[in-house]
Length: 316
Length: 252
Image 1: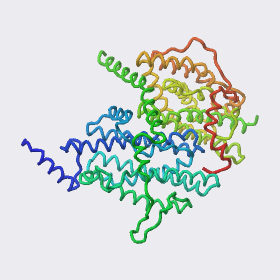
Image 2: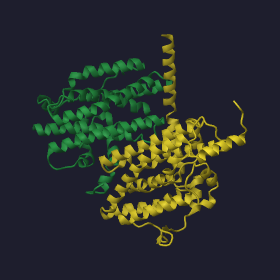
Image 3: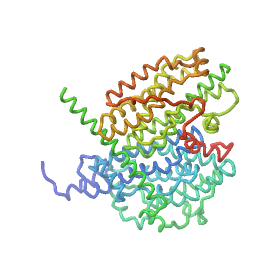
Image 4: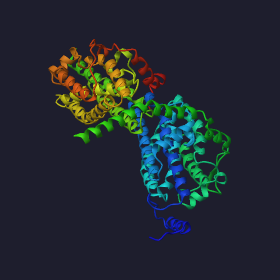
């Protein structure tokens, strides 16, 4: 086997990417590519797991048996997404345990949206409609991501997310057409979740340091601002359809660009939430940490039991 | 008590058991000891809520007053819920949750196996469908009882404590009154006394493997079937009923 120098390897690697050939776990890849993916996939996995909490908050108070069942199924799907994303990260050499420790220590990030509280039942609709809607915008391009295991995980995730999005919009639309109390509940929910949903796409392109390289590697296939604009263009007519008002006085259709113009995003708030100062950052991480600590004895017992069984099998 | 009333009450009891246990289990969602268990517990909660829905649909048909399942599920007074005391007990920790589930699963499996022969076709169909889920639940809870019982010293102590606390609610599983007599006579419901021994044997078998013991004090509590509950149910209901009570007569 001939030894190739790094430069040649990188050239071959980029050629594969340019030819849309998927990179698989055992293929050579630049360290920076591996690191970027590990960061992105584990962040995504953490977002699924932390994302269980704001919705889990309403399972015990769901207003009907049907809604309770649907919400349980949805949160269960999110746990499933977390599982296969952690598995995708493991193919890059990042084990689940240390990844989770990074989440708990604050080293690893997750989507800032989950640091906002769920204050009413309408939030279960809004989250499905806006948050899952935004997630789909982000994730559909990732089904064509250059890294095989991530792209394949995304295909499955996106199918379920689009189901969640429809369910969310169904709740929103039902409430928007409901009693005055219900209308007020859902409008209030939209008011609270609109701007944080726009922030889900990340900083503006000129403030997004990792974007250019990620686009070149086809880890990212559309820029933050492009995705955000696409989300707004799709969502505004949906709000109009059910008679809800988007809380942005600068929002208006621009004939010339064929897009909606929208108001300034409060990036100071975004940065504060990312840095841990959002309304629920501490609650979310505490909940995850408590789950881990309170479950330590269970995991130890399962391991000890498995060891005992192994020994038993060996002596028989 | 007419046959119709007895059968209605009988179905509501079966549905209340899964409703209240499903509500309890769903409190775990997002807080499980490992991600796989989060998924498993959520799945069990989902199955139990599904069983409740099917049973309540049948109940409101039998009653014939045009109620919907959510009125039955969410808008009764505490004393009108007729679930077993066992299922309303708090989660405490994963050990309690598993032991509670295990006692219930063994009982539910025996009950629903027998209900597959109910003279009411709809109930028999619900039983058959639910049985597949219940068998999985029982496998899951049995495996964990064994793992925790025969795991570490700490897990053994914890799960034995759960057994000691929850044992006093197990006799009520076999509670029978005029409701049961009526439905048994007509072949609609099942005579649980016929499988009380099977229940005990099953529990003992799993406990032997788990190195757990049945407590010596056998004083037993009952009251759930008549609407006399433990203090825990009121809190569970105030949370569960919140939306339906605060926003009345609305579609969700």
